[in-house]
Amino acid sequence: MPLDAVCLQAIVEELRPQVLGLRIDKVQQPAKDQVILLLRGKRLLLNAGANAPRIQLTEQLRDNPAEPPMFCMLLRKHLTGAKIAALQQPLLERMVRLELEITDDFGRPGKRTLVLEAMGRRSNLILLDGEDRVIDCLRRVDAEMSAQRQILPGLYYDPPAPTGRLPVTEETEEGFRAALKTANPERQLDAFLLDTYFGISPLTARELAFRSAGETDRRIFELDTAAENALWRELGQYITIIKENNFTPFCLRRDGKPAEFSCLPIAQYGAAMEQVEYESFSKLLDDFYEAREQQERVRQRGADLVKTAAGSRDRLRRKLALQEKDYAETQNRDQLRICGDLITSNLYRMERGQSKLTCENFYEADCPSVTIALDPLLTPQQNAAKYYKRYTKAKTAERYLKEQMEIARRDLTYFESVLEEIAEAETEQDFIDIRNELKDAGFLRRQGKGKKELKRTARPREFCTSTGFRVLVGRNNRQNDKLTLKDADHRDLWFHTQKIHGSHVILCTEGRTVDDDTLVEAAQIAAYYSQARESGNVPVDYTQVKYVKKPAGARPGMVIYPTYQTVNVTPDAALVKKLQKK
Image (cartoon, rainbow, N blue to C red; front, side):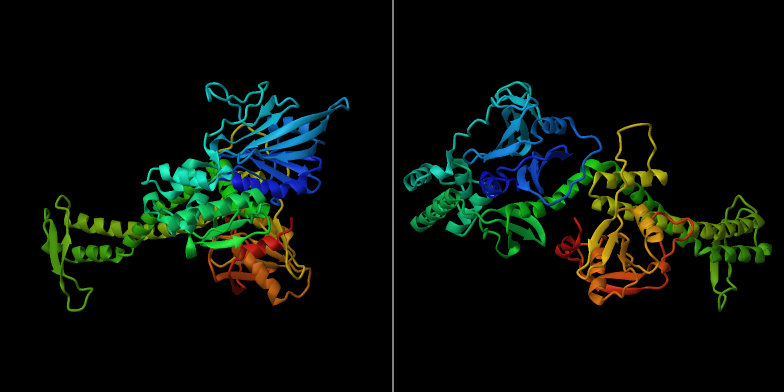
């Protein structure tokens, strides 16, 4: 769900005591819609994306591009060293103003304002000078885009126009009853609340209707006096919560995945959703948007990789299906040889021009009668030779198809692993490494000089078990090979999901004895970074690194291990995050 004004107010109230007075040490822009202000160990995220506009403190580490965008450079010029003097939100507006105190190049004090407009597809991040004049913004809005409100460098900042609806915090019981009386009786309660009041989200409107009438789609004409009183009571309590800033962060999960969030308990879904209370809104937003941002990164940065890998995988599947069909036909080749033998043994009974031969099949018991199709344009000897030729061709084809099917299955497994890598890619360097891997394998064309790429090498994901053992997880196939076959000690333990695509996981033992709890934790990490992440009771094989070998000519990431043991685990996302080293 998009961030509504009341949830934004709750976040601002939570952030204000944590960030006021802090100075901005660094400015980062990891994505085109995201800016992070580093405040003495705290990371303040301002997201102006259409699908996830928000402000929060974040613990998630985001990778920065090789070259910072122009807007990031501008913010660094104006905001590095600035102190946050105020954090303000206009009444029930989806916007936040960060008032900043700066010192210019000549040592003179000054002011800057960073405005976050969290308004869906119209979201924006705007830098203002001391007179509220626009220095620059993330998305420039000219007269062609909006005749009413332009946001361009040099113009004075003009706040969004009011909607004309009454702010919900200014409503009284008399005004509420009068509005309800004059409303269209066919309107649903939630639609009436949304149309009448400013500051109520669709989720909250449905919740107020549910609490007062027992249904989310109850219509106004269906209300009796008790239900009308209940609706005002619920609305009044909601107004009190807003005025007193008495908010509690709640996340609603469907099948274990975040689906909604709110600043008050939500009862309308009943048992269909699990309601989880969080200690802070920032923590809630980190968890809520983590998977969505991951999908967005894959969509933006890995679209060509997904297209290449998925297209190659689908072609291989079709090719393999045809090969298997042809291979099945070769298994009946003995019948072709038998037909040739029967024609040869019955030449004395045949004449040129026959379209079929009916004779006894002496290869079977009781010599049953069999009919063999003939080409009337060929002699009997030529028909026999034709069947022998088809038999020899099928015999050769069997050997060839067997080899080709083995190659196709190997490549199919490889592309499945690449797609899994793309789905788990977190940083820009991850996508660069996967792209280079596909180029080296010949599946992507090498182009001339283009965008500058990151020069640093991505490190494996690193974890620390509860007992202090170090665990390393490969990010892609080439890193899996390097981690397992070059970097790991021969005494270390290697983990991988059984017959399921996933990352190579190394438990660094340093010669120490590993207890069962540590084995289980390492196995859970291996199961989490695999295609079985959402499954339960996942089999994970483990063995010493010295037993893991790479066959000659195998694709990146493909290994064999003749000696191993297996442990069944259920991936636990909370445990994996807890063990991961920041």
